Image (tube, rainbow, N blue to C red; front, side):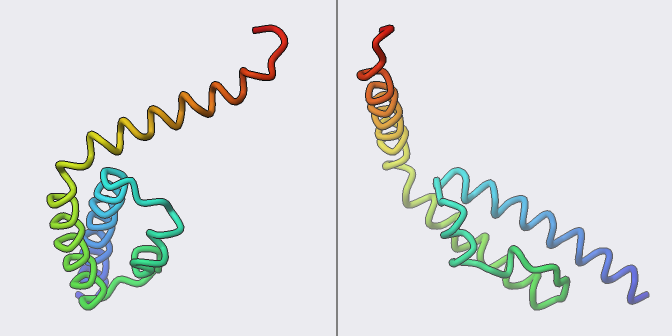
Length: 97
């Protein structure tokens, strides 16, 4: 019985972690901040408390992402500008251009 519960918890927590990674990606949260903000997502522990922690973090991140929705297109534009700037910096000293 305990083994089935542990396997079930592991499956649930793994699913939560997938959702967390998706929310972090959508929010453009860098890896170092992910670890600092919610280290439980990187610990190999599968308990009821850990599952509840993950569920609360998903709710928190989803609310944060929802509030960020108006800004996300601007973040995408900023990233594109920074990418173009980096490409320009690389090419400006290239004698073959």
